[in-house]
Image (tube, rainbow, N blue to C red; front, side):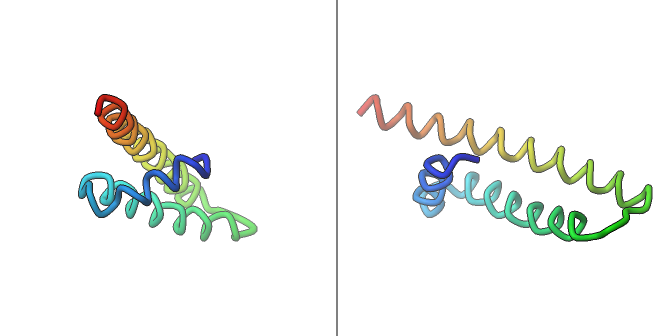
Length: 78
């Protein structure tokens, strides 16, 4: 996620509970991925879990960007 997008998202967290939910989930998934990435070897089960987390993280990021886009569009309309 680009820094300017992340700053915009963080500035909206108090105003948009849905965005906050996805942001918090995204941060938690990042932590879990970091744990896997620090291992020298992953079991097949861990590899599957890591792929699942990556997909969930991507879906969450897409939703955050969609919500951010709506906020930007609403701000431009004002």
